[in-house]
Image 1 (cartoon, rainbow, N blue to C red):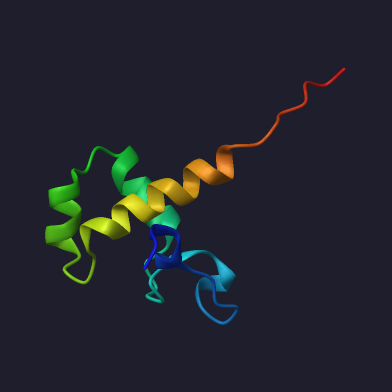
Image 2 (cartoon, rainbow, N blue to C red):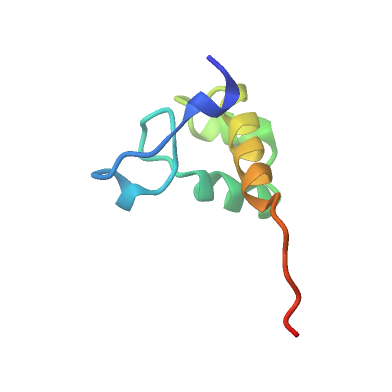
Length: 74
């Protein structure tokens, strides 16, 4: 399984927002935990259904979303 295959989007789950492997754990939830300073170890201990590759997948997914051209307003 490639990292990005760990990110799933289902119309009837979490309002169609990207989640980790079909769970209800959203990519944004992962990013908020990391932004708040939670370590990978803390996240994995608090959410035992997650795997280390899930954290990597969420980071890669967000990095790809942010990789676009931004046009400055004239």
